[in-house]
Length: 344
Image (cartoon, rainbow, N blue to C red; front, top):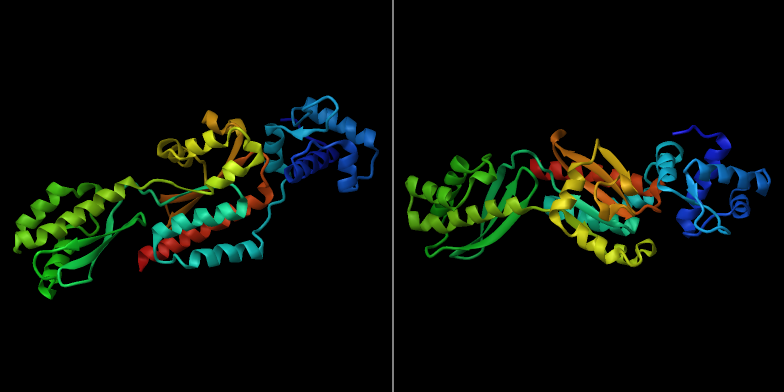
């Protein structure tokens, strides 16, 4: 990639920033008026023509101004964009928005996408931590009646599942004690993938308790453990896709693509480093060739083998300078809050 003079850098950055705001091609006179550059319109026009020949700008029509190419956006993100910190207002919006879901990892993941979609006006995809082995960290049984209780299961990935259980016999202190002994001895810190109907039936039959009393509770443990395997990326901001001018005639197809678990999971998995930005055709899926994807990964307990992510999907003409700090901060806060929830 050719090095650019300082004037060309300023012109390229200004064209991108103006085009991001207006969506209209930028001409030399309009650029001078907006930036106050101390040079003639002819000089700016010549520089813009050179940027066209170098592949950073393009002219959609003969009489029109210039717009950035994907190459121009890449150069801008890598070399020209101001590396901003998140502003205080956006920071407060994120902090207060997540506060209602503190202690519940799944709700935090869902809420993070909703908040980020509102801030960025893009679609957002959030995922929970995806360690190689998903362990059961906690199983709680909360009586809500003489014969009923709410069972809650929490995994090392921050997945929280619950369901109502009913016993034919009374939900006595003795039953609860026996249940917790079984849970502690057979399920805590064991892989959720190893727990199924056959395994819990074997456990119930092997311990010195009433088999038929424990069986409904064991079946509930199995059902909750199996349900943790179906965790999928959470999509927020669907309406942003449909309402974005840049996606006119294309938004419904893109939304259908983003609703599929397998390709979206692959987008997150293929992201490089803690922050990954792919612009247009840099994305591996053809459905994203008109989009940019920003992925920021977070770790749980500082473990880089147990990471989740928050990501933004929007048009190539997005406000990178302000969106990137928001994605970074959301990722950082989400990692901290999920770590705290799993430690409590």
